[in-house]
Structure formats: structure tokens, C-alpha cells
Amino acid sequence: MQTRPLAELPAKMNSAVQSYCPAVPENPEQDFVQFKNSFGDVYAMAASLQKMFAHSREPLVCLATENRAVLAAALLAALAGKVRLLLPNALSKRALARMQQATGFGAALAEQKNHDLLPSGIMPFWPEHHFSGSLTGEFSYHNDLVSLFTGGTTGAPSIWAKSGENLFAEAAFLAEYFHITAADCIVATVSPCHIYGLLFTVLLPLVSSATVLAETPSFPAEIEEAIQKNSATILAAVPAHYRALRHKSVNPGSLRLAVSSAGMLASDDNDAFVAHNTTAVVEVYGSTETGGIATRNRAAGEQDFTPFATVDWKVSNGRLAVRSPYVSARTHVDRDGFFITGDRVDSDGGDGFILKGRADTITKVGGERVDLDEVAEALRKQPEVEDCFVLSLPGPGGRENRICALVQSADFHKELVFSGLQSLLEPAALPRLIRAVPRMPMTRAGKYDQAAIRKLLSP
Image 1 (cartoon, rainbow, N blue to C red):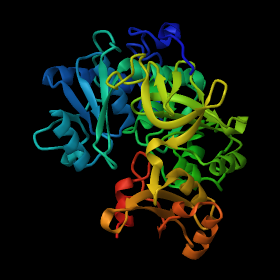
Image 2 (cartoon, rainbow, N blue to C red):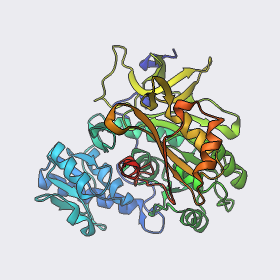
Image 3 (cartoon, rainbow, N blue to C red):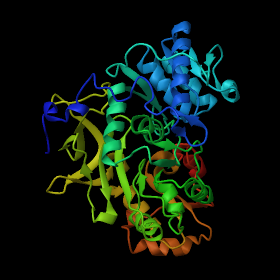
Image 4 (cartoon, rainbow, N blue to C red):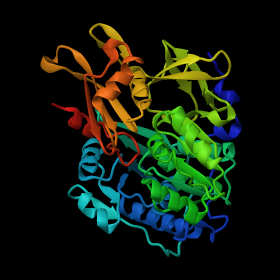
């Protein structure tokens, strides 16, 4: 168990009144969004939104946009006002309807093209880009600022409330941790509707004066062009995109840092990217509810995760428990203030921990314990398999679980794959069903689309 009293956390991270953003932009001419919106534009839009929010008197506003400059303006307006923002996990009619049913929001920040996605009766807002007024009042970081809606592919959707302190304290820490400044240009392959995308493409630029690209590239050629055309210094991507880039050289010499989050990065993909781009990949481990927890840099010889200096942690019944300024106040914690995550860990005997996968990836097949993460790792070692996702699904009659896998493969030979797996897995862990697709279904957050995968593996 590694713990430290919250009172001993750095003052900047433990203050409910710390100001992380100036009331007016320090450099109005600096690009917030590369070649599109300056910091002056963002603050002007924030002032216009503050006035609109006050006039409408709607307490809840849904962020039905992926425009990073407008999202930044909304955060500033909400800090200086009395509205609470809602961030859907996807911009779709279904996701917005489910959020409206869960929260009852009456207004949404949405450009014209997204109006048809809004539930009936919702009031749309859009800021004035050249508003002449200024933000009024002081920024308040201790109230709930944004509630993030997470999808329900394997269960009921959840809404995690995050205060201004939760979000801006983490952004300020990450800016210092990664030495992010106004000289940096960020390319991200993940939507700002995901907490990882929101942090790296909206909050981090706000607190560090860095510039971010408007686009969210996802195909290898798009990512390569975005980095090279804009002389990007930071790439924020997800494991699926590093896998797609493993044989590509995308760094024109400007890229100084690559960051991976929203899932475990395979060591082979990490090594291949580093070899082709001479840029370290730093894995950031965390979740929507906990915020960032720890990092690992395999290029520096790190095999275990090292928690941030602002995070306390312990192992509770085999699971990681954390306490930090970034954990949502709405989470259930133990009497010492620790939130119990769903991830299995072991202490490495020092300051870090070994991440062993999700507790819910353990299943029973024929009475035998099977770790789905181990099955996926064995599949990825097969030459024919580019990527995969493994599930435990009820067999015929629903009386017995069976291991099923969807694989991405351009030249799939089931017999060869099964033969390769037999030397790596126990009989109970061998998949009973493997189906191949040319491209894995992914969500806008860069995660595997489990609902789509389950349909593809259904009888």
C-alpha cells in the first residue's frame, strides 16, 4: 500500500480556489486551433456563451459538438457562470436521446449540421466568434463543471460528474509533467467527446497555451499527413492507431512525444513505433471516473506503471484503489477516500504496480479459469492476425460460456491460427469461434465497438 495524506499533495493540486486559466487570454493572437481560432477567439466565444446561458436560464447544457475551440469556450463560460455541461459519449441521435432521458437537459451547444441529432424541444446554442464583450465574474473550480456520459455496451450507461478542479488540476499537472508549452502543436486521433480527447485537445491547450489541430485523423495516411503538414510535436493516440502505425515512419523530426491511452498498448506495437519514429510512447493509465493515475515509458526501460505524484494508491482484494484530486466526487469510496477500480494489479515491490487487466476479463469455461486478455495476447502473436477482440459469450442453450474472437486479418487461415494458439493456451482457453474482418469496428473514442463486435459474433 502506497499512501500519502491529501494535505501533503502539492498546493496547486489540492486547492479549491486555484486559478488554472486567466480571465483574459495572455496571448490573444496565439492559435488555439491551428490556422482557425486564436485564444482571443475562444475567449470572445466564451463571453458570448456566458451571456446566452444566463439569458436562457437552462441549468444543463449538452455539448453536441466536437469543435475544440467551441468546447474550450463552453468550459470557460461555465466556469464563470452557473450552468453545468453534459458531454455525450457520441454524437448520435441515440446517445443524445439517452442522455436527455437520464438528465432532462433543455439546451445544447450544437452547430447547424447537428441540429437534427437533438431530441425534440431542445434549445440549440452557438457562440458569436467576434463578440465584443468579456467574461464577467470569477472562475469557480469547486462546482460540478462537466458530466461525462459513458456508453453502455456491456451494461447500463454511466454519468460521471467532474468538477472544474478535477479537470483543470489534471490538465495543469499533465502540462507540467510533459513540459507542454505554447511552442507545442498537438495532433489527436481521439474525439474530445472522450475524457482523453477532452484533456489533451481542449483542457491542455487552455492551461498551457499549446495549439491543437481541428481535425481528428484516424487512418494511418491521415495521421501521417496531419503530423508532417503541421510539424506536430505531440501525438495523442489510442492503441488501435499505434497498431496501424507500427510499420510507418510518421515523424518528420518535429514529434517529441507520443502518448497512448484508452486501453493497453501492446509491447510489439510500442517497440515498432519507437523504432520507426525515434519517439518514445508514454502510456497514460486512468479512466473517466478516476482521471489520470499512472504512466509507463517502455522506451525508458519501464515495464510497470508509476503513479503520478498527486495520486495515492493501494491494492484492495487484488484491485487497484486510488485517491487523488482527479477522482469524481460522485464515486463511491471507502472510508479512507479510496475508489476501488475494476482493474487487477500487483505491487512491483517499489513505487509502482503491475497492471494485470480488467477484473471482468476473467471467465469460467468448463470449470476452468480463463483470462480473456491472455487469449487476446496469444491471438496477436499469430502472423495472420493484425488485431483482435475476445469475448466470453453464452454457448448454445446458454448453459456454458465459450470463448469467441473477432480478428482483423487480410489473409486469415483458421487452421493455421488454431494451430499457433494450441502451443500458447490451455484447451479451455482456445476460442470456439473466430471470425475475420478487414477492419475492427471502433467507436469515435478510439475504443473497440463492443456492441458491433457482439453482433458480428452472434450466430
